[in-house]
Length: 380
Image (tube, rainbow, N blue to C red):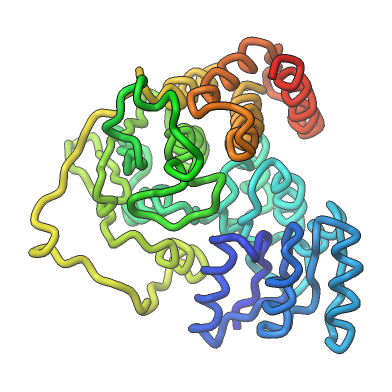
């Protein structure tokens, strides 16, 4: 019996993880954590009967406690509650699917508690890869990627010597605006940016896909997960999202992982690795597909990608600044306070304003969130 904790259970990844639990009777959910959606969380508690559930908002946690008083479940709140959910004794694996830097502290706590990490929270490695990867080695735990692209790379490395990697080919769908000019993006509205052509995701990550900032975050994440230089990571736009990523080796061989767009596949692979299990899903119809295509990313339009390489190569606090500035900018765009292209301007502004610190501590990384927010608010 495999026992898991899910941080971010009411989000897209969390919901799909629970769907996998529903179809694998030897997978038990022992703790859940959510932000404020206690209506859905209550349904999940009643269906999966975890021992503990965490809610970020304390007032909502009290309301949930009243709602589920007929059940044997402990309700906790805030960062302490999130850490409690991540370190619950029974769990062997923690699915970290919360969005943002809020996921950093519970991930560290889970590693120190000896839990394997099924990682869907990009910010953990983007902001603190220099801390997380050595810590995972020290505590002898596995970090298993849940992102479809990183899972594809992970699968393409099976049985191979990672020291023989020539380059990582990180595929990108291009999002809903891949063929648009910069002039055409000036007046893009929220509704259009939320219409991803291939994937069903949360609002924030869907906007990140439209700006290609999501791919920039994945580049920085791949650098830490697979211990490669940034110059070894090449982003290729692949509109059909069938090839999820690939690895090229020093002899010129390229090994790739293919599949229809379905996040349950990389989630399930991370949960049961190295075992492969049956998954009821659509299969690739190669005859129906006919052909697939590839394009260079248009970095002059989608500036989130070159800015990510710049932040990643600078290291230190810059990846965290990049990430935090984007979070703030996306929130402002979704609230219709700024225009689509302003997202890039805000990221570039913040990277120029915040002084870099090399080898930052966790406290310094968390503090840069406040500094970056204040810097952005002073201008926007």
